[in-house]
Length: 398
Image (cartoon, rainbow, N blue to C red; front, side, top):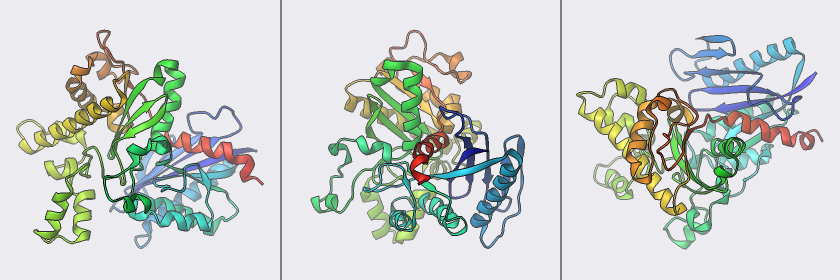
């Protein structure tokens, strides 16, 4: 019987899961089995798993998220019975660890209460991971659960990067820049070192471009600056989120246009970004197919790319130059047109693209003439979470 680590990556409308076999070391990068419940809050949720295409799944309409978790649990139990395995631990991607949690931690009732206090800092993500943790604490209290934090990788930020230009009292109350997408960047720090050796230890900027998006400047494979800050609203323009915004615009919306706090929050998180400007979609793949002749879509994509180019320049200034550029996450790994437009905007840094390599989503998409290597690296957040839980297994077993 081999021990497995179950990883849960919980979003607002989907839950991804993966099982990693700890009997093989080093821990394999590919999961033994994985899957996803998608569209949890919609009219037609689906479930897919390794070797099986997504198909309809029936969820309790009154408690769809809890029902999705129960469906995954049932499928995992079937898999365990078939393979003669047991689950040694469950690892969760938790977006926010606040100023207290930097290392992976076993979650008990006390830790769970602490993490619930951070929900206002990550309202799109934090509640759902915690709901999964709470459900397992109730139904399987003996099963060790490990929280792995998206903010943790940015613990190495220098203090000047963490500070917000507010009052000193605000700093002392914990208002600071935390940074996010840390599990993704942590994976890159491991994978790039393995693939490129000392070359990866220079001045690297990683572009995590998905429905949420951020950049991270790394020196010696550690985070020294990042575009997301106090919340996951900051930095780049995203699918439905605004990114960095003049706070005066928020004050105007509330004071002059009389939008409530709830309405402003919904606008910034759900009605801005690519969707807000285009009025069509938050997905660049959709927008690119409808761009020609549509001024709003053209504007949305132009601003999306411009913000990325602008922030790369800012981080290159902080690093004092640039030695490596890395695209990752859904858009970064797969969207040829967005990568091409971003790299065109970075030609002044010596970036030159190999168009054929870019079209093929090759590992290296820069040309021989490029001063800076431009890479595409597939991220693996679930593996990072499993790896952390695996390292803690001796402690968890006590």
